[in-house]
Amino acid sequence: MNRFAGLGLLGPYLRPYRGRVVLALLSLLVAAGTVLAFGACLRALIDRGFAQGRPDVLNYALASLLVVALVLAVASGARFYLVSWLGERVVGNLRKDLFAHVLRLGPAWFEIKRSGDVMSRITADAQLIEQVIGSSASVALRNTLMCVGGIAMLVITNPKLALLVLAVVPVVVAPIIIFGRKVRALSREAQARIADLVAEGGETLDAVRTVQAFAQEERATENFGRTTELAFAASVRRNSRRAAMTILVIFIVFSAVGFLLWMGGQDVIAGEITAGDLSAFVFYAVLVASSGGAISETIGDLQRASGAAERLAELRAEQPVIVEPATPLSLPKPAQGAIAFDEVSFRYPTRTDSLALDRFDLRVAPGETVAIVGPSGAGKTTVFNLLLRFYDPEAGRIRVDGVDVASLRLADLRRAIAIVPQEPMLFTASVADNIRYGRPDAPEADVRAAAEAASALSFIEALPQGFETDLGTRGVRLSGGQRQRLAVARALLCDPAILLLDEATSALDAESELAVQQALDRLMHQRTTLVIAHRLATVQKADRIVVVDQGRVVDAGRHADLVRRGGLYARLAELQFNQRAAAAE
Image 1 (tube, helix red, strand yellow):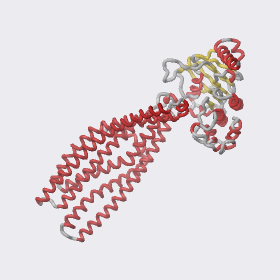
Image 2: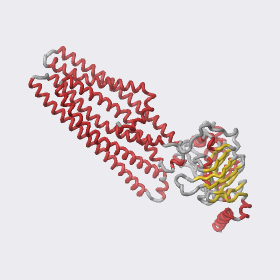
Image 3: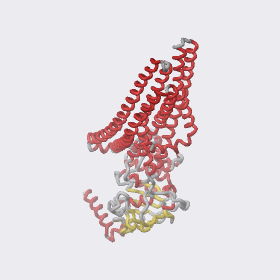
Image 4: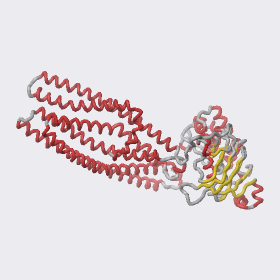
């Protein structure tokens, strides 16, 4: 049935555990069979025990009921454990695979996707899958077996009344099909609104300081409230359809049971069947009715899960823009750090109307420090993004030590590079774990040495648990200068051939800037370094300054030479130094 096609996503995840799947199915079959056996026990109890007044038959029937009950209990417990285990295991593996896949999609994909939506799919949508495997699917299958078995027993018990039961089946199935299509579409809509809810809330909480600083708590609450109401409305629409379907199915089924009971009562009065036959028939009819009602409910769950599985399948079908080479080359060991941009042109996927780099040329020798300066939007950060191969250029080549970066394994390329950004990202972990982030197996002595070289040892040792102090979300417990020095320590520990400094001191006060700059000087020693800085005073010690404007290199040289020649750099320098002089006055 194509409305459950999305659940095909689960096949590869269930296959490794087919032994447990088989055991779960056997338990389910035994449980369904024992429920059907109750009808035979009930008939014997009434016709041969009550009607004939034989205590021995009564005792035998009771013993049989107890045995059947024990088998049913054990089989049901085994089924519950096995399907619950399968649900948790499959969804755990699915989440791991999806998260690993998303991490490899690259920044270009995240420019048009919200991380909150992605996490909603991996958590909330996957939870619906777990519910299906761990509950709904087995309930649907068990009730289907009991429904089919019950119908078979009805035919055996009384063919005439069984025909009336079968005549009701199309009337029950029709609303399930009609309402089911709409329920599935509404389930997808409801999950999408929940994803919006998670994204909205996550974005607001991530920026909670900004929200509070501008006294926008009430506005943020209203926005979140509107998103919540949209999610609520979508869920109500879905649930109202499911409720209408359930009402209709259950009414039809149990009305049919009442009618059958009336018909069977007439036959008992006429002497055509025994009371035991009627009791067994009613038992099977109720079993068929309750199974049909349960199936109608679980079909709604299955359709919700199918919609969720489709959203997960869409996520898994996203292809990375940056692909690993089929036959990767290797950098020389040790890497020297030579960099070459040859006629590189590039435009961002979300800004296709303008070139970020336009036939950009740059050569950097091993161990050289090159500062890249220019106005905002000139393409400075784009140079870093392309060197790290977050994006591929649309024209030209980028080489490291003479090897095209597109021919290298991404891990090999990025291990040769370390970046100290303007806003370093720290994780909710200890100081030591944050410093080790690029080299998780680094011994404690190396971590301490990197912290000392980054001028961070003194403040780390002053923390309550030293290197084991938890930094909280995004390192919120540290000052800007302290976070920056930890980022320098992290880069030092990686011991890269190429160092990228992206406005590494621009947001710091004078004292912190001095400490970080001293740490950077040690980090830059004998390493190829590219420095982006708007503050020209921080780049005057560079071996060479490259001036970039509108995606092109427009000038290059030492600070004094560039000022003497005039041009863009001289204007930037004059503007900055005049501003400082005016501020001093």
